[in-house]
Length: 255
Image 1 (cartoon, rainbow, N blue to C red):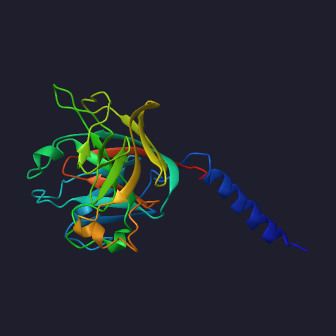
Image 2 (image 1 turned 45 degrees about the vertical axis):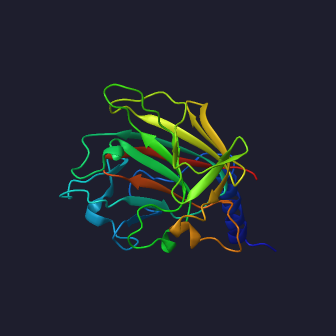
């Protein structure tokens, strides 16, 4: 006979399974960084250098109040689990001014890193995890600057049946200026296809995300000649401009 405790455990697990597939779940609890691990260039895994990533007023904030200057100390905060087929939805905004010493291209710049290598495998002084980056950009006072672009640290993708080795590709999005909240959603189907969406509209898509054998960090991850990326970890960036994240939500999809 099955005990009441066993039935309760089974029921709870079943509920969790349903919630994790086909429904949005929150990866960020709005209270603390539970479930997330920081990796900043030049620092060991898990050291939140100068409190770069913190939670205030229900927001995950990336800030540099304790820095003298940026000095290429690129950072990433990784969620604890890896995923393969899913949708991720991130609500973010850029605030304030870029820290002294931040590269010009990093002005109002952050990213959602997908199919990331395990952060435990990153080198101490590695700038970025080998990953597929959904680049988040805020517009300047004038001029066009798209967001939900693609950048490829240690990776390549395929578009229109051709291997694309260019590091960054622009989306077809609008320009988002000021400190307004912007929601970017990404549909990830393993190694098949990745689609970037804003307000439900596709602004970029590509296929066959894969390791770049020309890249020194990616080379270490290639096993038995396999290049295609079926899944990986998710991280958010620290690239020298203060940014805030209000929601980080994920929906697991059937393969």
